[in-house]
Length: 313
Image 1 (cartoon, one colour):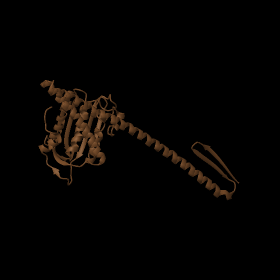
Image 2: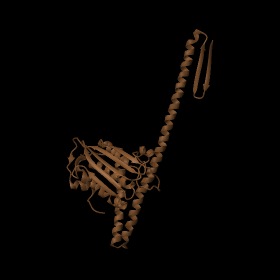
Image 3: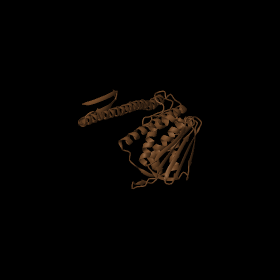
Image 4: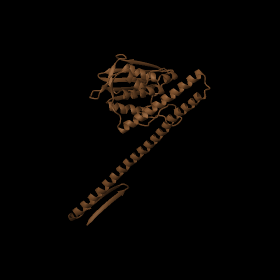
């Protein structure tokens, strides 16, 4: 005879088997084995269920983030386009005097600059996603290179009464061999963020140096900063600290993710320190290019291709 006592509770089966005849050992062993298999299957099912719940939660968060991104990108494209169309109508009307015409033309340029900047980020993000971001290497005079990027934001800097202090260790002719288009996108996004989030009248400090074969660029602002709980999110694609049509800062949430992706391609890295209400400092480090890719010598013509002709707006 075999006497089996089972105590059950939800999600688990425990067993106590008392053997009264030595000849029943094999049967009892089989019962125990099957009960063990059942408990293991139940445990595996619970583990799988938890993982599926986590995946489902992440998918829902991803969809919500992408939805916010699409809403933001619509606003970031529609708003300057609407402004450009409205301002252009004023020019076409012929009712403006010389000073008014100049003012409208400047506003059109500013809106077009914003639109071009946002679209370039979108296109670059798409190239990175598709693995179609080719390498082009040039010898760059870093001081002049960054100066021209700062000048490209001069209208925004002036509008917020900001000051920019730039120090290039080694002088404006410091030469560094790297990909100029990628470096431009990196520096432009970081300066754009510093300008956008700076408090009016505050300084922005930029430094550049060659440190043991690596180009180190630091950009510090005295802006709104980033809260501790939001620091892990800032490099996520489509992620913005603010969302919706009433957000106080412009942008689509791609800038820093583009920066980090480009740095990964270049073998570089990025570090930052932020204090809510006091500002942020972003520091990027890029190794000098070493390889067989043809190098284009630095030239003003090449610089104008990247930046456009230098003009005051």
